[in-house]
Length: 377
Image (cartoon, rainbow, N blue to C red):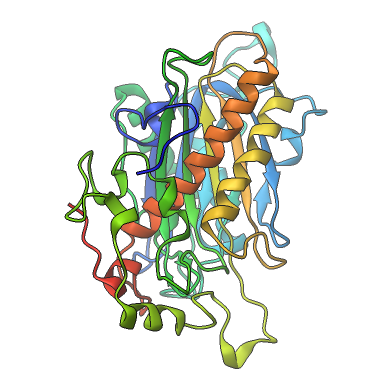
């Protein structure tokens, strides 16, 4: 168990929807083998948002409008998609569903409030090599994920699914099976941000390794709050959650021997570019402007680089969005922004670990749990 800088703890569900005002939904692409999908985050009432792209090979849509100097002030959804560049078409389905249900920017203002354009940025991962090459999310997939996300938003029933779900279905974390993960963080009342929540949802599909090849332990294990990685508030048999788990020496050797030290790089194909990407969103109910949302996205990449090594490579498309659901029209001070930035990085790091721990072996790609024998409670 680690000691947190501010003494915070995971939220009630330790998921993205611990931040109020959000809805989360997943869908599997139709006609495929369950090997690619879409995850949609809806904020029907609008949210201030920005983005930071660190990988050299991104696949994105509507990210320019999130720059602080540009005009659009709010988004209505985000789409995290499988299917590489083909999967960007799913965002059109998200837009269609939001428009159908009456959400979006009223382009004519009070003259005609029924004419709305939903603002839906998106990003994709390259997952075409796991499962069927032709399994690609489309407009129908995006619309289905949006419907489920809107329903979750209306009912406040948090979708806490992780691992092989939505955008994480075809993800590979280096040489291991990757997936979709979530985490949240609530500041204690004694701090300037008492009661404020930060959360993250991440699709883990990097070129880099998610474990230390010398120990077999997940790089992000020490970010654990309480014993969350063991499956609950109590620790596992070691008494210390995941941090107290020791990987057997023969399993360490097996892990390190998977490709080049657990990365996606193949020894016999060192000159061939590997196609990857880790994408996600960091959310908070702290008020902020677009420039501050940009800063939150930038700082949250620290969590990605702590849990994945190496990260932000030329063929990664690493992209993190950041958004605020706060209804107050005010900014957050520099001290509070520092705290939010630290919490954002922490949530991203923990969400990556949750994605890997919940991943199931699929399409000939083994999970970290299956290799090491680690069992959650």
